Amino acid sequence: MIHITERAQKYLKSLLCKQDKKNNLRISIQYPGTEDAECKMSYDTYQTVLNQDIELQYDGFNIYIQKSFAPYLRDSKIDLIGNQMNQKLMLLAPNVINKAVIHNNSVQTSVEKTPIFIEVQYFIDCHINPMLSMHGGKIILVDISEEKYVMIRFVGGCNGCTMSNITLKNSIEKKILSHFPDLSGVQDITKHNRGAHSFL
Image (tube, rainbow, N blue to C red):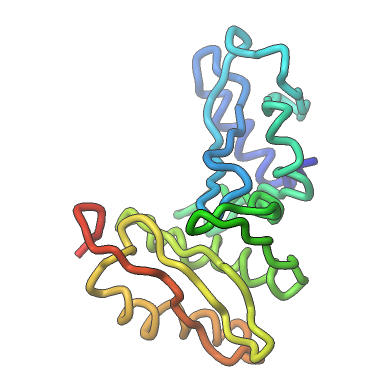
């Protein structure tokens, strides 16, 4: 269900060894199957393991997942990115929104997760969203058009931010096109709603 790279397993084991009686982890999903789906990994203890949990055993720790989340975590991967000075765990879950989703009170079928879609999504999760998270936001990859345009939505602090267009052109688009030169560009399809959540 979830592939954890060897270096990510070593990193998780070293973290858990420093915790007092917290030698297990739990992966949960907020809003599974929707465009706003978000995976979270947290410390867990044996006292909170539930009957409907799935137990995944690794060297030195276990991971618990609610059974209803299993379809959304199919083909998931946990990797350790960055250098020794700035390491970060990254959970890639390509099927977390691979369901029919509710959008503007109507049912919308999720796009097909082609190889290029999955590669761009992984790049966004590793190299763009960690930067945007410092401002309380992130981008969601919605689709890649036939004309090879990357369609994204800003959420969180980036939704309604006055700097979102500058961030899109000067940072997000440049990074994506430098890594994927065959793509045509990045287009923002967000219905921006400026409010207290907006960063600027």
